[in-house]
Length: 159
Image (cartoon, rainbow, N blue to C red; front, side):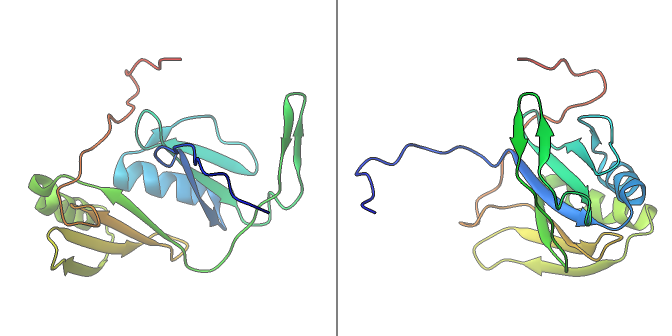
């Protein structure tokens, strides 16, 4: 197969998924600890949590999506995963210590703090399924990150 000379542009990651043993427990953890709000009502097999206006964290019950999900509007291919996965969220440099305090208030043990040689810092901790969660103040080049607008209960959703 010969690749096209023009590669259309892709944008930001819209969805990322973690696979969890207890969906309700994980939804509660991400809502309580990181302040994420429901993007949709949880189903038996999954829940979407708003990270920004355009980005969601999908929590799938392990083994709950191993068959295609057929809807009138199309079929979603099966997925599943296991093991310790990693997800990173951008945070403001000025709020690094506030996040350390927030995690302590929530009873979440900080596993590691990294000061990156390129610039920026990260806080690493585990969710209830031992996935590694990172809160990071910089991008891969060490520059401060910009945050997208978080969806709150009172935020309007635009189509």
